[in-house]
Length: 127
Image (cartoon, rainbow, N blue to C red; front, top):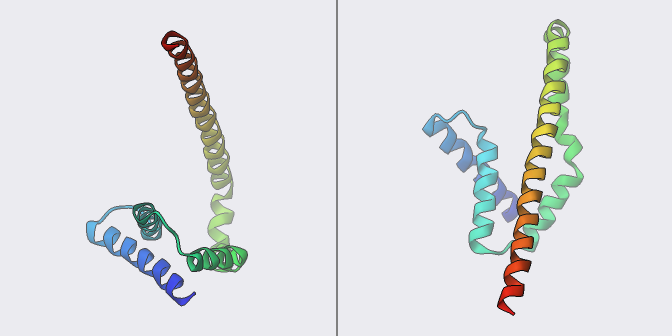
């Protein structure tokens, strides 16, 4: 388990170092996760201990939200002053995400349906 946690932290550190050294406005831990996924795809394997560690972290994920909750409590005045704008931004971004997701799904569905129809036509001609 220590090796798996070390791997996770090294990937997070690598992502953070890359982001800070390149000056990219991107979260370092997210880049670290991309590096981890890339490594898993390149080596086409995942150690069972990594899966076990990830499951353990996910089971205790609620503990990781405690610092965020403390931050919300500490910045209560800001939330009170700008609460309506924050709620509006959250609602609009959620609606926009749902609309874009639905449009992308519809476009991909049409494209996939067109391909399966083309394959059926070409399959009949070949036979």
